[in-house]
Image (cartoon, rainbow, N blue to C red; front, side, top):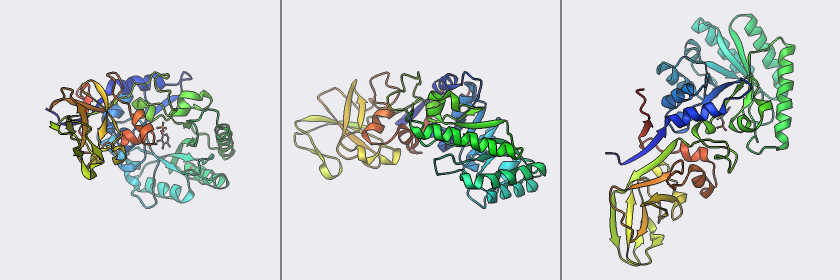
Length: 374
Ligand SMILES: *Cc1c(COP(=O)(O)O)cnc(C)c1O
């Protein structure tokens, strides 16, 4: 018997990937960083590959090595590298590495020599996000250094890539500027003889709305897990949310009128009622900011959290409905049974579905369906 769980519908992940695959034939890199957006990195990766992904994307070296340790052999790109890491480990494991500066490229070159292998590199250009990526002024020097390292056999430039700032607002003027900036970065690289097989720019939003940004490879993340980054369009794109967060009521009891509920008594019962206690709290990813507000499906109805969300539990006032210990309270899911979605939670908390699904705590078991042993 389970107490609280995040069920993950692996068929939904596979189906979402199939739906996202570009008609142009561009390949698809499923982004499985942050434990597969909270869904479990390895099972999510396998489901995405079953749906037609041919690449996987992560941030850290440990994430990439975790995929390799699970026996996954497809190309994996890791793109968040501080200086001074032991880069011979990912190079030896055939992990593609992103470089946005000459010093990092030098570290990769040295790691390749140490590993006795050619390192696979993706050069990252900043086309307007002003986050990762080489600035326009620094790009020629990076490309020149990469061309030299490639001629020396230390690296192979597999990709040139960039990332959008505003693709979730279709039509925003920065989008066209970034696409043309990316074209200029490719031209500069070609001028140094660097013409890699994979040019990639599109996140979920651009995968869904901007075929002209698909190039050779798209990099969707949130949409793989069934949410559109463009507000209100999840159903329109035929995506299916993969995660259902739910828990069993641990105690349902009658409380008198005027009872203060949970810490600080920020909620008082209006009349005699049943209070159901659900074993999920802010340590499990239920934001404390959802106190007296968070939506929950329980006993066939949509209800709200009563009083403060605690570290490990919250309460729901269910009136005189026959809710009992053991009944299932669904915090969010695909919405089939009237339960809230992660989009509903995101709207309430002034955030995005990404944050709702990734912050489900480690204490909540991920239960994959169908089970991984297929
Ligand atoms: C997270 C991430 C993605 C995926 O973005 P979504 O909006 O979730 O599709 C793609 N590329 C990079 C560089 C990322 O960091």
